[in-house]
Length: 433
Image 1: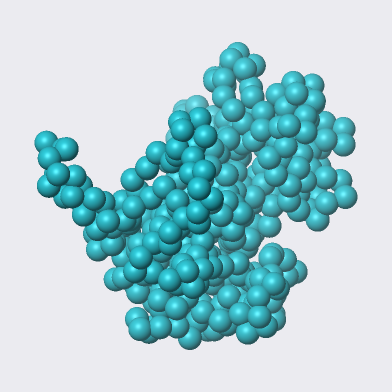
Image 2: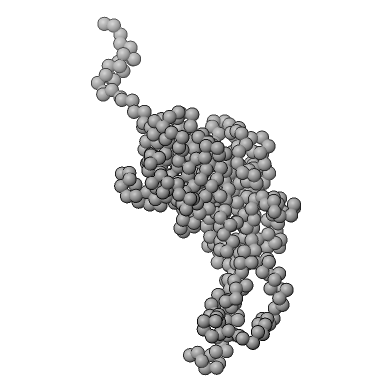
């Protein structure tokens, strides 16, 4: 009797078990836990893209549907413009797609002559199609038809951090909102850096941080995002891209990209939140044009920190919180990338600052009805109104230049002390119970 080999015996045993089926191609894609993330090199047609996003809950829209959503790309719906192209506010109706609720959306239309092209558009679809997190803007769907490249996002009610810091001058962000935004953005970066296959965001800046109705920060615009280094590699070598003033110095000089490059960019945005200044501002004196160079010497000195804090805060911020945030910014901005903290450490440092309650109270605003011609309150004598005592006009002008948004410059406001004295006088006269 011939001797049976171990292989033949195992083969006999294995023949009694049902044959294993290979998984279909579509099961290999699109999930955060996939061992291999789909890349733009895998996609050469709309059909490839539609297969690659199966399981990601992305909707593929037609050009006709996009036109309906934006009212034919109406100018009145235009809400922004960037390196990718124009962004419109739109609306998708109930029942347009199974599982898609009626909602406001942001529609980003790629400019064929813009700074970013098809490759960056694909990168955004791939990254946001496979990654989901409360601090990443939600990509609802896309349009890939003829020359049209369109991205459809959830609509972010409060716009970008850039607008709040530098464009909406009449309504400055309070200290608590700035901290909340910093923590949210840091959590978004932490998620990217700690994904199974790390992602380097590469374009972290104020205009890419969007805010919802509750000022929850979400990262947007993943066109420049890159997969992190693999194996024994310490960095990714790539062409230098990004925004002046935010890029880490080692990345600009060598093209070597790591997660610590994002940490540096976060430090710049944290400085913008503290100072209310842009990362680069050519309108300022030469020594103050580059925010990092101007602010860095003040960050570790509590005595000097007040000189660079945003005057629009009008002193209403936590002194201890500002000192800790400034020290963290200094840590993130170290020249040696290995000396910078991980984003998880950044979150752990910032979150406790949300609970500090040493923020000075702001002035109590008391609206006083002003006399008008309609109520007979005009003064026909032609006399010049008397100036308020205790304060010279030169002091008013200097303070107004430094703190233009302070409520004390309103003609219809009283500070707490003045109001308290006013009420006490009325009580003494017996006209107030």
